[in-house]
Image (cartoon, rainbow over all chains, first blue to last red; front, side, top):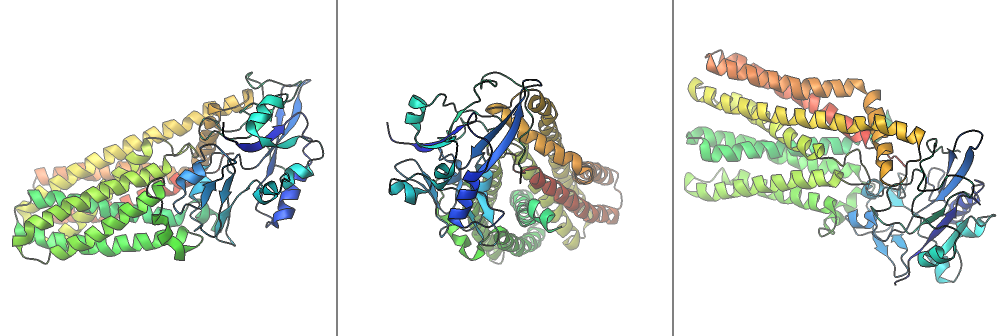
Length: 198
Length: 311
């Protein structure tokens, strides 16, 4: 089976500190409005068993990336290790990928006139290092590696997460672990819409 | 205000509307190539419609580049014909533009070349059909469930038919003076208008019903975890909320892009059957084009507004 690198986000371990977001923005010197990685916060369950959970998301480096298929200038490519890379020099800023990606990953920067997105820190990965966001995570909630390895070794590695769009559209490589004491992915539970905090 | 113009994708509103008017007008003229038995009238109409269409479509294509972050590199969008609907759309409208220029030129050749001109007319119309299909497919994507519905192609096609027929109608009012053929032509125009308005109405209602499913989905989101395919409901909730927040635009669309053309079409039929005033019919066609354009403009703005990011 070919390698498919991806992230694993453990909602049990994530404390919503956003160190991952900050590390990514800092490393790539991003303007304030661009966030390749976003931490979303949800409230799940009902009192007295309500839970506050956090979900750290960036590019899902999908098996069948809609951004790549829709791009009219072929600015996207998928590496052999599964990472989906965007070439800003080829981009003309048509923003179609910001529509085709169900997960809202590519973001348009009006100052540069092009779209940008998480590239999985492929330069670091090529040197045997982990992406910056993973390095910065203080609770090891965010990990990175081969998707098959995640499915084999993690406590839980499912494709669905609260509010996360249908994984059958593009087959994202990201896997999730739901909170241990909270609801299970297959069980309907009360949940509030995702809230983005600044 | 700047945010509103960005979210409403004004560049794309102008591009889609103007390009659809031209496509619709070409469809009507192509039908006229085979049905009209008045060569002099057909020639004047053909020349005027095509020479109106060329600058309008050129303007639409030029305006579409204002949507880009780097407009000078717009030509690169032709690269991915095999995979991208954006590339296919640009190819379709570029070919349409080329064929339209050729068609406009052929109207100045003598009638002996009519067979070639008719062939180019049919090819231009086919390019127009492909243009509307690619333009619709571009929006019918799982990433934006608010647009991923058959009503998108129905609304785009009906807009082309309705505005195209009215544009040809207005040009007809400017060049034809003999009453008898005019009445027959206005009957055809009324039939096209009624058909297109009915299609637009079906598309409008289907879209409203589709987005209104977001109301039920809101219950799902608040009452249970939306995961996987259920999250489409989240997107529809976003779309439905935007429709609710802009009642003026939706009302304008219903009134001016559905009710007005239906009433105008019926009035035109009545005028033709009862040998009413041609002047009145002319005024009706002029004002209907203006009103329907405003209605479809409002509809297109709300279409783009509803396609907000939802995750």
